[in-house]
Amino acid sequence: MKASVFLQEVKNIGIRTITGVPDSTLKQFCDAVRMDNGKEFQHYVTANEGAAVGLATGEYLASERPCLVYLQNSGLGNIINPLASIANSEVYGIPMLFVIGWRGEPGKKDEPQHIYQGKVTCELLEIMDVPYSVVDDMTTQDQMKEILLKAKELMNENEQYAIIVKKGTFEKEKEFAWENGYSLVREQALRVILENVYQDSFIVSTTGKISRELYEQSDALYKNHERLFMTVGGMGHASMIAYGMAQADASKQIICVDGDGAVMMHMGALAFLAKQSPENLLHIVINNAAHESVGSMPTGFSGQTYAQIAAACGYKNTCTVTTDEDLRIAILEAKKKRELSLIEVMVSLDARADLGRPKESAKENRIDFMNAVLR
Image (tube, rainbow, N blue to C red; front, side):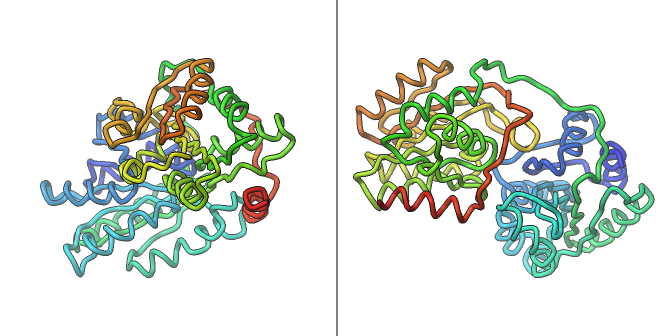
């Protein structure tokens, strides 16, 4: 089914606002929403999935219209609190339609972080009393229309409904494309980071292509990746993992290589880290202004730099760089100062089509990393 056709059916049940966090399984849907460009729908990319539920709640309170909230199933954890304590029919009774990309579908090969989440996706919705339908590439327009009419009936009763979308459900149409105006390629920036920190530090990297590129680059440069902890799931939590390491052993230099979308998802961590102010933590944010690993949809960020925000929170040393040489200098200066620092690296949206994935399991990588840390 074409995502544009699905959007027309969504419009037919009275929805005019779409909000959420992008997902690769929903890429065609996300592209169609961006191509709409406000003609039929108001669209908002929120900091995290729970925030989208909050926005949908406010929309309903002011207009009596339910919203469509889209997310990857990994984001179900972020919506449980507002769904249970605000939207549920036993609390305020706020109707909304969830469109959920199903990563880690049982029986299908996927990344390690999606395996368990995929297994419990339907169970989580059942526990949360959210009725759902599962759709795939065999779902017809008439069947989708029936599903949405059922959803409308339940939303009229102040309940929620979910559509779980399997990979390949939506056909490829016109792809939404944009450029952010920066020229430094992320993979080159990551190479500079590795060249200047890998041999005397331990790295915690965020989920997505950042970790995959660091994995390949560290193997190419040093024939190992044992000093790299790849946070393949739990988007937005890499900096707190890095802090956990930094406070546990102040003699070790810890580097957090974060992404702009991940930082935005749990930005309160910046204030916490500034208050703790660990001297042995260097926070590097790779900023391409997009959720690039799941289809390159722009984030909902205002344009102010994360370096400015970190400084306002109380980070001792912050800067923004746009070239590999400036990045190298910034890293050396931060290591010399020995204080909580944040370096924001502005990069383009480029990524290799043949980018590989870790060959080991997540658990194997964790064991290798811990062996390197503790020896």
